[in-house]
Length: 535
Image 1 (cartoon, helix red, strand yellow):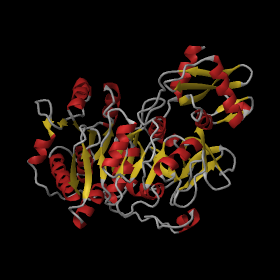
Image 2 (cartoon, one colour):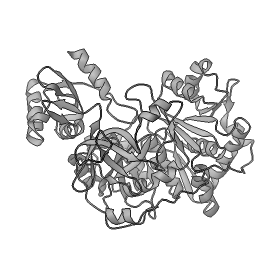
Image 3 (tube, helix red, strand yellow):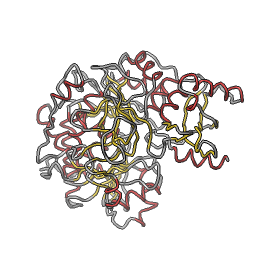
Image 4 (cartoon, helix red, strand yellow):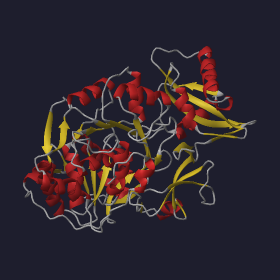
C-alpha cells in the first residue's frame, strides 16, 4: 500500500487508504494468493528437531477450508474460536479457517497457566478451543468453569472430552464459501499484556490487517521485495507476531518460517535464520539484547524491525554491524498498532527516538486539554483509523476511558522532536517526578545496558521525602560480574557522565531475573512491588 519514496514527507504525501466495504482477512491472506500462485510457498513449518515441511498457498487454502467446514457445523457467525497453539501450520489454518467461517478468532499464548486462560476464555465466552496435548491438560483443569465452551479440538490426540482436529478436517471437503464479512465486522479479540490489572480483550475488525500494512512495509524497508522470507521469535499469540509478521507476509505472498523456541537461544536463532535463508525478521528488544550478549555477529539480513521497548545507540550500532542494515524501530499497542515507525532505507536512525508517524496515521502529542503540543504530552492517535480497535470486549467504561475527544490515548508519554520523529518517554504511570524534573525510565535503561557489567535494566521511581521520588534501578548483571559497592558507584557515575546527574540512579538493586511480560516488556509495576518489600 506504500509507494516507495526517498523521503518521509513524500511517502506520506503519496499515501491514501484503500479500505473496501466488504473484506475478509482469511480470504485475503490465503484464497487471493492461492488463486494466483497456488504452488507458491506460504508456511515453512520447522519442528523442534529442525526438520521442516513447506506448505503452499494452495495447501493453506485447502486446509483452512476444511477447518471452516468443521466450524460451520459447530458455531454461528460471531462465535469465538480460541487458538492455543505455538507457531505452526495448524495455528495459521485455525485462524484463517475461523475468519473464513465468520467467527472471531482469539490467539492465546501456550505459556499461559490455567488462571490466565480461564480469564480470557470466560471473559470472551469462547465456544471452541483448538489446542495441542499440552494445552489440553490446562483446558481440562478449568473446563467446568467455562459454561460457554462447547468443543475442544486437539491436534494429535482424540478422547471423549474433546475432538481430533486433524481427523475432523480430513473428513471435510477442501472447498468452502467464505462468509461475506464487512471490513468493520469483528475478526479478532487480542488480550492486552496486562502489566496492571486484568487483561482486557481488544476487539478488532477485519480492516485491522489493512491498517497494519503501511507500518509493516515501512519498518521492513519497503516490504515486500523479491526473495523476501520472514520469521520472528515473537509468538503469533500476540499482535506483534500475528499482525506484524504472519498475516501481512501472507497478504503479500511472502513465505513465513514458523518456529518458536521453547526458550530463546541466540545461537539456535542464528542457525535457523541462516539455514532457511531468512531475509526479514521482527526481533523484540529482549531478543536483540540476548543476541548481542551472546557475541553474535555477521548475520546479513535485508530488513530487521523491532518494537516494544526503545532502542538505544548501542543496540542500533551493533545491529548495523551484525545485520548490515539499520534496525527499524516501530511503535504501537494491542488497541492501535504499527502507528509509528522508522525506515533506514529513507533516513538514518535517531537513537532513543522511535520514528515517524506512519503514513495514514494521525499521531499527535497532546496536552491535558486534548490540544497538540510541542512539549511532553500524551501520545495519541486520531480516530477513525483502520488499525484502531472497535472496543474492549464487554467493557464499555474502559473503552470510553481510552479516548479524549477524537483521540485514542495510548497511555504513553512522548514528545515530538524537531526532526518530526516521536520520542517515547514512558507510560503515564512510569514517568518519574523528582525534584521538579520529569524523567522517563526508557532513556536511563538504554544508557544502563551499555555498561559492560549490565545485561538487563529496569528503572522506576520510588518515594523520597525530599525529592518526591528518586530514580531506582533494578539490574541483572552479566554472568561473570559480582555486585559490590565499587560497581554501584561506577554505574552511578556512568549514567551521570552520559545523561545528567538528576537521571542517575540514587538506589540500585541487583536481581537475577527481570520481571517481564510474555511479550518481553519490563513489568515496572512488579519492580515497584519489589521496591516496597526492600524498604
